[in-house]
Image (cartoon, rainbow, N blue to C red; front, side, top):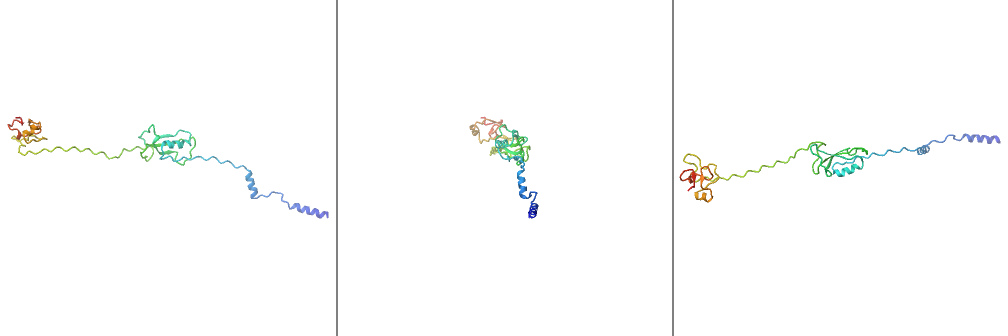
Length: 204
């Protein structure tokens, strides 16, 4: 009887598993026990500042960097105004979406409000293509009345009163206009009014 009991004990001890089971539960528990490494903080990205006023863009950039925001004119031949808060941003460095560190330098290229951006930063501003003002037309010259009595030419074949801009039908009309007497070559003189042919018309 004692021998049978001993055999049962020996068989029972042989059924025990001396090594612990390794399964999914054991793996998960081991992973939970080991500390997970901390993830590094994410680097902020540069926002898009193009099209904004410099004052607004500068405020957005200062939230990410510690250095002063650098402003410059987008045109090489246009100086940056002392007060450029209302100027618009055409180009930015770093570009939108690029990672930015607190020690990064932000550069903004600006144009005056209402002025278009150049094709690239630092380009020269082209002169205005506005059409040139048309010259003021000269006033028309007064027309001289042609003589009706054939007195345009003198006895010597010369033209009397050449270039004259006045014409008087009679000496009375010339005196009424305050033009008499008129000498040869003066406005209004013609030999028809020079009765004595002395070169002075309406002198009597």
